[in-house]
Length: 191
Length: 191
DNA sequence: TTACAAGACTAATGATAGTAGTCTTTGCGT
DNA sequence: ACGCAAAGACTACTATCATTAGTCTTGTAA
Image (cartoon, rainbow over all chains, first blue to last red; front, side, top):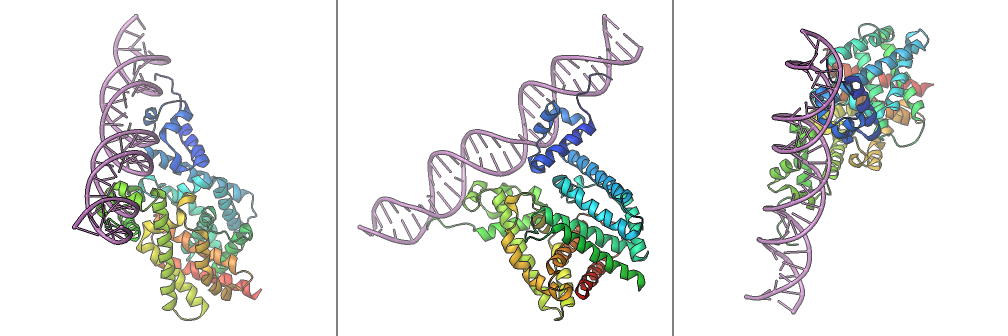
């Protein structure tokens, strides 16, 4: 090879994540990102095809980090299915609160081009579905999983978008909602 | 009053909604909107302060339409709390599917400036909370409502963002998830 | 030592939000 | 009737960005 690279793809993505978290996606200009990396904007095109691809990279990494958070939650939890599912829910919510801008970007990406790869998403939730199967039974595990993910994701997004502003303890409300859902899902198993 | 107006605020918002639904928000240029209205872009500034304010107007109208959909759902439903809550859930989901782009914009608006007015949001969900109170009991009605809204919103958003792609009947899964949640919430009342 | 390829830069283009200033229409007071 | 004030629209311009084209630089391998 030749000319000494002054940056690389992982650094670019990580820096973009940092800027997005600090200023919001809509404020992310390629010039600012480049300057943060000590280069000029056009040089970024050596590493990413365009801005959309750059954002897709950020989304992909963020999703991967979310599933790492799942693993951490699981290793610090009791072994029964109920505890594990609760640990995942709270881990998910904590992750979203720790990096709200990147979380929203990753899970509400508007265009197809910047969405995360569906196949890897599937691979990453399979272990979660296995836990859900112990609660809801195998037959309803996919439906119950979908509801669970919807509940977590929707609650967190409403929080992050300041749409749950009537006071009260949101952490407690989240916990109650998740436990209620799991209680309902558990009834599916005994039918 | 003088010069004959060639458009007005409601028309501008409605047209913006139509274009957003057709092409997506990111494709909405003020020039296209103006041309659709038979005027030039700068003339729009007689009616809206800037693009952000325009989008906030769209968001406000969309939210109002969502609550009109709630009303329709309620009038076509049986009178018991369970039926009414189910009707609202399905009405909400149908609304989101009927205008996915505007729905996403309205409920995941990134910046504070284009978010819907929180106070009116509260006023609009109060009747829903009253129904939830009959299911979960008064004490837990706010928490249970938050979980319910989160579940609906999150499920729908995952659907719209193509993140529930593993087949199966999503309508049936949604119904099952909502019923499970309500069953769990009902247990709060008997504690 | 020389060629070449990777990596970065400057300069330019095109889209688009927003601003300044001007022209046109029409209702109202004289 | 007449003319003026103000609403509404337009043209022309600016600033910001993404993106492209073409050029210069530097390190490695022959």
